[in-house]
Image 1: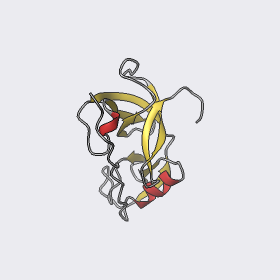
Image 2: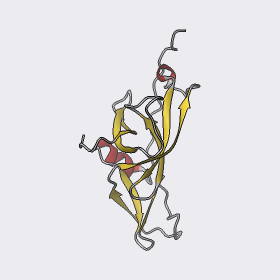
Image 3: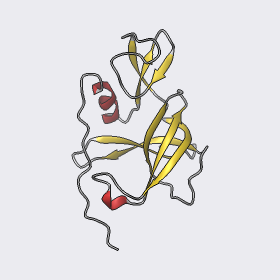
Image 4: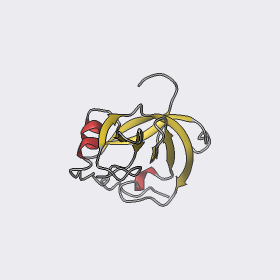
Length: 142
């Protein structure tokens, strides 16, 4: 059975709240909001802290490394992913303590394991925008 024709992936539309995240992505840096009072990170970007409700958030660069908490094999794709099926989507617990959902690249169904170490990697969307994904962390930077 032939794979469907690829459609363009949706392109993020930054808002004033999310703009620092996308600016960091453009530089290859995974940026997270950090609550100064709670001394905790949060993801996805919001105007207020999920920990205290305050607007005292600062942006900090994350390590980009974490542990695969869960995953799924996607057979029915969302728009722009038709040519990639089946593909893996994982729930990654970053070393900073937040969980983030993203594509898992560089690993197949037979090799993926819950508990494996992963690191952020950047995919380029059709318009050149960077988008985060995760790949196995072999310990080498890069």
